[in-house]
Length: 422
Image 1 (cartoon, rainbow, N blue to C red):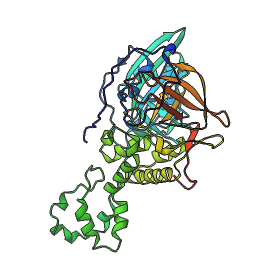
Image 2 (cartoon, rainbow, N blue to C red):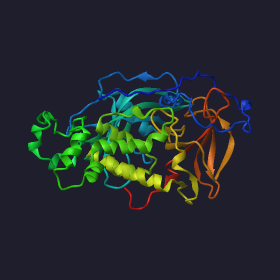
Image 3 (cartoon, rainbow, N blue to C red):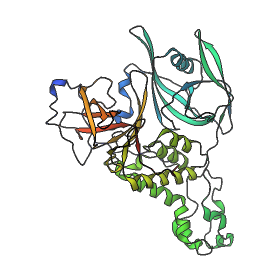
Image 4 (cartoon, one colour):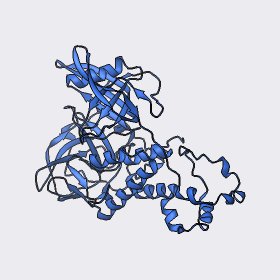
């Protein structure tokens, strides 16, 4: 798998800006190039200092492996993905004990993120703790964790185990789900006799796990002439064309951050692009349930095409227009969306935009627990129904662009997609 490349404009770190330094009338939205160091939000520095690295081997299981005893952390608002960074700020005793069990007992520091979206849906993510902080603040135990998703898993049963005099939920017989890449349609209908014209075809990996497309594009189009299916249909279904179409739809989200930052393995790419879609949790769960990366990518492309067709982000309560898909930008190296946690342990999946409409601001700018270092935040509400929809982030530092951007929580807004979409 190719290494990820990321070009970021360096920014000198500074101390927090005081409220008195803000002149909101003088702060204007900066168009064009983003100079903010977008590595910073991906590090989740707001979780605090003095993190301890969870040393150990990279968590990896073969497909169909059975995990006998893994602690579960429940999250109702967010669907996690393999390869996605997972920030946790636990204050409840049950969650704290589950995370401490993963850190102190599990060999790989593993736990399962279970989404309770729909009954009987048991597709979850097994995550691995990368670093953690255990502290006692004002008499309350806090466990802060930076983790990463590793595998999709199916939970067979859930039981309780006593750990540090507290009952914690454990997954029994959790099964690692298979992920594969189905072959291009042309591979099934092409004439084997053409192998004499295009030598080396017998060495192609047909297992569906290869990262390499089966044939060069010119050869594929030539071979399509010997089938009854029109070339434009085969072209539409070709994996490389499918990926390029997805990249074209998401290219504008990245500004000066090239999308070569995306993984190049087909399955990993399908996880990554599905994770950055600004869509509701139930739609992401439907994508997570898919085992075939090609099918997942086809559904992602269908969603992207409908998103750009309507080009509208609406309030989830009153459905008034809040923003446009064209205004989405990436303020993190992870992409235009991301999962962040607040001091109340509540997780928000947000999408960042350069401009919004029909909103009302409240309160003074605050710098505490800011998800974007060097920015302060204010609450945003829908001007029509008063629904809390996100935050406005502002900075007075002249060496950072944009000076203003907006983060909308996907729990309270939605991209307009017609009802027949995935």
